[in-house]
Image (cartoon, rainbow, N blue to C red; front, side, top):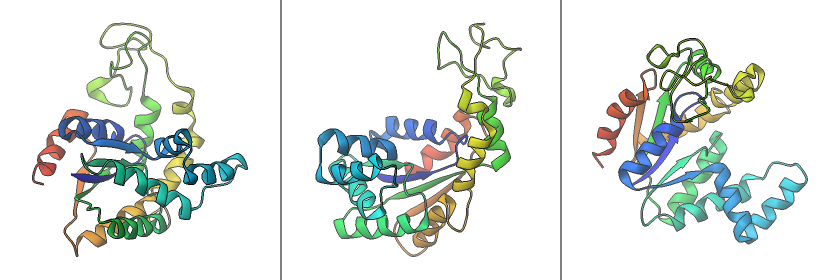
Length: 225
């Protein structure tokens, strides 16, 4: 099973991706890890990309797409979940053409839907338990809202990440994602239009619910493969 997953920061995309990976034994391929893998292996593509990165320039799609494709091809025997790429419609189109040329199927495209303001609140509401990072605490989610500044599971004093409280940085990331003409949503729409004419299935999941509810709705749809 091969899947591309879309969703804004704060939608729970990473969590749902991890659950899908665990359920179906897929390779969870995150965009940043692709660059790190090529750099670690010292591949020709990785070395070319490093030259751009060392200059502080964006790595062009002509290099990025082949790097992604190499990893997808390498993981194709067990299936993969691609997370964080593509980020714009041009990348989406180039990736689709590369997949077709390589004979790699795309079974599902999953989009987790969440209103922008809700996504921002979820990020800014996250609180971290110093004793166990897996303890869920969020001041804007009723089901996991802590009592004051104490962990709702163990009572430890909660903290927050500085970048979770940086409203400008969150807005900048969301500007890219929610741009339906040139951003990540436009990439998702490319695949949505594409799946209307082909075997790939496009799944839209409401991300308003908690982790368990979203999982409960999503996994059975993937089980239909």
